[in-house]
Length: 497
Image (cartoon, rainbow, N blue to C red; front, side, top):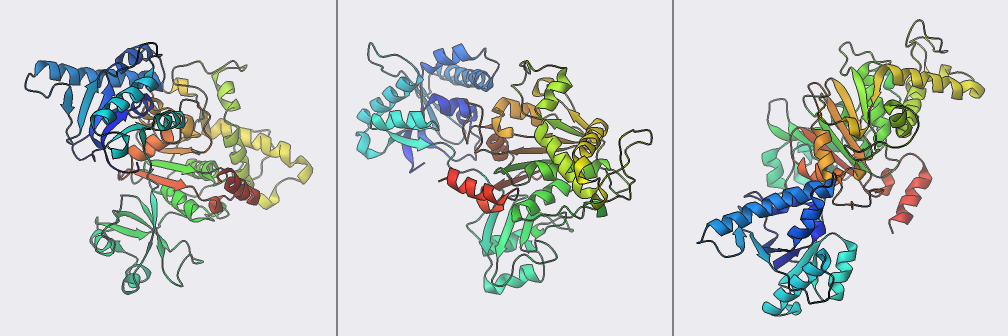
């Protein structure tokens, strides 16, 4: 938001997008002195509460929170009228929005009417004391037309990475000791809080990426003595020679692989928010195939299967009219994963999956260079890929995820930017013993009309799990880190202008 406001009128999209704003924790920073809620919102929320959607789920939570607060105010004569004080000191004020007769009463007009009333009461619009809090461009336009200030919600999203320049006298801490303790970090960068599992890109003159790896990047985690510190990346290389051809070629890929290949008990949840063409699906598929033992040399396999839940429909709703059973319908929506399986197989080589298979597979000693001739490669790889899918993968739609517990698996959720908040909570909670969840998405490619760049499931999970020792958050919003095709970098630059 542009500056601190005394009174914030919550637009309905802001409440639906973040119901937790009504119940802040004690250490949560206040958004304003007063967060003002038109009491008439209850009528609209009552209409939505039966919907099986993110809006319906949020409406039920808001109604419950408002009901608890209003009941407290009614039962405590010493309370401040219609004002409820939250744990962090912010006050929730419930008020009737005076909408003129003849005006259609909807959430937008209610918020604007209440904001105008507060402006008139507290010195007019030029004081900057009152604003409408919203994430909707349409609501911003309506508020601006009514000469009301606007406070944008969630202006900053946790990225999971930062760049810092080491002072000259501290360079040896990293280049020689390869270790910066939390105390040393706080001394060097007192205004820059470091978060757990956050990646740090050090900028040092004449020092950067080397032939032995991305030695200018560290991760804030526990060192070998159990103390929190920034230490070099440890897991950016696969443990199988067959996968030597798959290595990071950008800084963000090094961070992503570090998170993917870290032991399950060290980083069980990985969230990658990245532009198209940055390797989100490819590296997740490669990690899964290596983990289940496809052409891997690791004696103790990490996963029993690769569990894929592609974007299809809302939890609890029908998965569509495509012909076939549930698996057929889900596979039709998982073609990006199938494409990446094919790409990984071409790099790591072909494995004889079964002795009695009639597919033209090679022995385990084969390499990608020994693949079939060009004119038969397409059919050959199609058969091999489907054999791999049958043996190692399980595809399930969102509709089948409720109540499941998925153990000993790499669980991959793609296109998470189109998942709603209540779906995101449900899907992340499906993790079982020995499993790793990989969540990927591109917030610039939203298809769900009810979501925006800040209210979607990808941003919600990244924000909630920031600084948690069991989760790694990685964000790629730089066009230069797109690797699929050089022209995509230019497309991304042109589209984001």
